[in-house]
Length: 463
Image 1: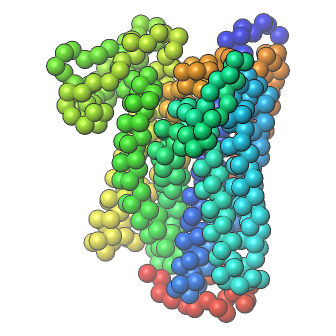
Image 2 (image 1 turned 30 degrees about the vertical axis):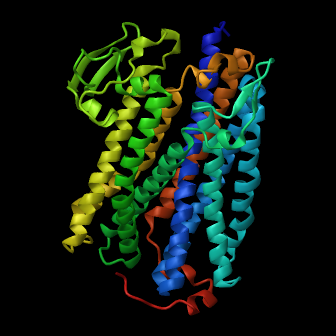
Image 3 (image 1 turned 90 degrees about the vertical axis):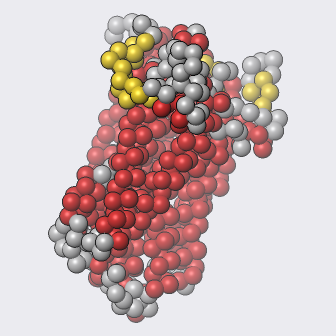
């Protein structure tokens, strides 16, 4: 095998972690969103006693179980990566990050797994309120899982509440400041909203797919209606949360914001930041090619006026800059899909108010195409978050090249190849099963194996 430079070895380690977390974050976010959705479905069933709600709960609980089964595998591999490929990070920051990751496993994981058996297999075997409580605890566990993981990640983005010893190790001095660091509240809210949006798009797409085949199917109507309600509520809220998160990034990670905007140099005196619609950032020449921009409009969403400016990339050393093209275009993909989801939600509301929600086939086709939009936008946002932090693992304090393990490049290449192979196989099988489940609409006889449940369920209207 030819010699591999240290820079290439570091790139291999980063690629493996990015590949691993890229798969896991989609599955984890779907778990969060779907757990809240199942809680809503079961609550509606107990309140309305309409059999369609029970059919929907049974339908989506199968998908939830499949998602968790695949997600656990990807999460375990990601956790082990800290101690193998990133021993420098683990050694230096273990006293801070370790307890938070431990709490994620102890509190969140055990809440989910401890009550998931009751949720998935206890319907009709325990009292309805006990089963609803189990579903709520599983949903709460998924939320706590996000809480601790995002607290750890946010600390790496905006570290606070720590001291650095003479040996270079980070140690906590204020756990409240460590956990609730400056970017955590906005990152947590933004991520949970993204998980709900991704779930909303998939639920609406599933309902739309079945409405295109049977416009009178009651479960398809419920799915499409709920998905569109979630879009019309969550998409505008996500835009507001994104703006607040952007302000936090401006104040605490100005280089990342400059990369998001492709701002190499300050605007001329008296002018505001432009809104760059298109550009090809050039790292070598430190400028943009083929830039298309609207003058001053960038200041409107960056500073909420028409003349404010932000830090520019050329104000920082070149060895402290992220890879601007990746951050720049990932940000635009996230924003573009976010605006598209907001537009679809508003269109759905207009169609609903006109009484044509079930027969607007153009909207049904659009939502089928938008099935992965929420998760793609979330992945793009995660790329902005992680790639924009480079070249740091702990922002401004610990560089990525200081965080990696001294592993032979050949071993890194082999583990990367193995990870890619296993993940692609696992994800392909999971996606195949998911599409098979979604291809068939929920049936009213899904609960036929549970006659005691069916007896407690009344027949209601499908609207």
